[in-house]
Image (cartoon, rainbow, N blue to C red; front, side, top):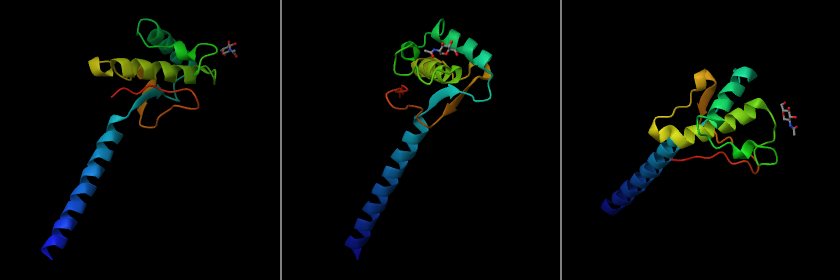
Length: 119
Ligand SMILES: *[C@@H]1O[C@H](CO)[C@@H](O)[C@H](O)[C@H]1NC(C)=O
């Protein structure tokens, strides 16, 4: 009886630990993308800033690069916003862009277009 209880206790502890790891992982993985409701002209202005003074890496949204297609203002904004956010979130950068951006916990990557995630 005593050894059964011990095993049960160990099993429950292992389960709780793996649950805790899953939950903390889930909370940590966040990307920054364009808010669907933001008009294209605002997204474009924010993208220009992110890719310029903001210091985001926008090489992948250039023609013939992995994230150029779909060639839409919204998709390119999402890539630029996320690049900026991942690069600077640990030093005070935020996913805001005058309200043009939102945080998501769904990885926006598709096909060969990988959205960066930095812990
Ligand atoms: C990409 O989209 C822009 C803006 O709509 C357009 O001017 C440009 O021609 C497009 N490029 C290609 C290769 O379709």
